[in-house]
Amino acid sequence: MAEIRAEMVANVWKVVAAQGDHVDDGDTLVILESMKMEIPVLAESTGTVTTLHVAEGDVVQEGDLIAEIS
Amino acid sequence: MLNSVLVANRGEIARRVIRSAKKLGIRSVAVYSDADADLPYVSEADQAVRIGPAQPAKSYLDGAAIIEAAAQTNAEAVHPGYGFLAENAGFARQVIAAGLTWVGPDPQAIEQMGDKIRARNLMEAAGVPVSPGSREPVTDSKAALAEAERIGYPVMVKAAAGGGGIGMGMATSPAELQAAFDTARSRAERFFGSPEILLERYVQRARHVEVQILGLADGRVLALGERDCSVQRRHQKVAEETPSPGVGDALREQMLAAAVRAGQAVSYQGAGTVECLVDAEAGSFVFLEMNTRLQVEHPVTEMVTGIDLVEQQFLIAAGQPPSFDPATPRAPAGHALELRIYAEDPVRFLPGPGTITEWQEPAGEGVRVDAGYRAGNTVTPFYDPLLAKLCVYGADRESVLRRARKAVADFTVTGPKTNLAFHAELLDNPQFVSGDYDTSLITRMRPR
Image (tube, rainbow over all chains, first blue to last red; front, side, top):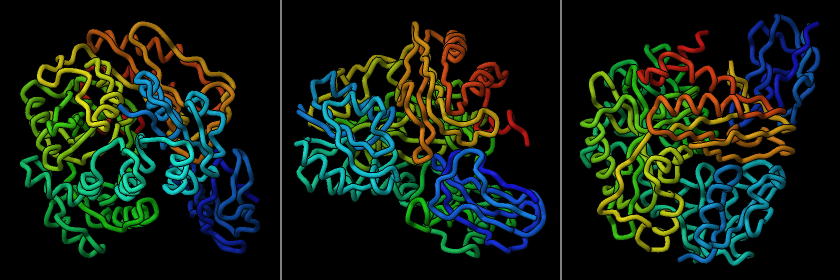
């Protein structure tokens, strides 16, 4: 089980992956936006997205859980 | 003279504009979103009006809400600052139609320069050098490939309606071009509401040097010297200085003359900036774009000329002559440097918003800080990461660098991440110190 967490305070601009998707290491899961910059959040392992904790328009804080991959 | 002005902006630039308004006895009105209610500019203005929630689209980009705020407070003029609606010709027209004075150029000049393709064509016709590039919008990736073939690689791919480096990409081959085109296209639509793309020959080892112009109420256009803005990350400026260490007297004279022609070609009024790329080895330059507004880095020009540029903007908007004699402007003296203090980490330059628990500004001879925040404020993810501009003046470049090192060491910001450590590193970087650097300096400092 790998947990993907937010590296900074940001708005969730786009949710690219869906729950149940197979993802490869390096695939984009979610795109955050902070201070006029788009920040892709990438899968750090290959597996299945078991849970997605964010939706478009959400605000995440540093350390918040974005997704779980197993 | 104007009696009152609404400042349609936030942070450090709203504060900067309010300062000159006070000096001239102009009543100032600030507007703010829910995220900014506690920032210094809101309390420093004579009046402040809430215009909406944090999202820029519902506040600082909501032209109707801003004009309504001006009506409510009986403001006579609107100063747009930079960014947001500053280069939106439609908004400028609405301001004028509402019977208000627009502190900026004629909307037509904004429009002519806002479309980068049209601006390039216009500049070429006015005798300003341009690099090989698109004369009309590039509509799809197939057309982009053909255009790149014609211009010659490497090429820059940009949004025609764009700015701030957003969506800009370089391509050295057809494969890279495809990716750069797709990125530029999606960002152009998202950030600028227009999918139009242009291609330009990429100038290698270029310096980014711009000329400050001032279009007077009587129609004369003056050039007030250049600024070197080659220290950039993600095509966005991080530090600027004047005079440029890479521009000699002969090249400076040519650039200033070309910038005056650029301004004359659009009957420019007020403060504007003609951005160029300089090939320092060849001693040549090409037009990049014109910004029809006050520039973030305007303080370095103010420091070496002694001219308050915001004051001139107000005077020109009121149809008055500038505060100095345009026939014999004082020659720029000394050297000035601006360091942009961003809320971002100093290594990867990723955003680091947060609440400021400690804020201690440097002070001393030749040091000026234009800050948007103070202790207790929260830096939110909704706006650009500029916290403050640390500006340093001195008799020569060497003394400026020495003062700047001390000032950076004396600047304490706790809470958000900041790039202060990057600036300390920059001021000791041998290339930067030598003055012989170009726009890829930061890429070389941070090899992947």
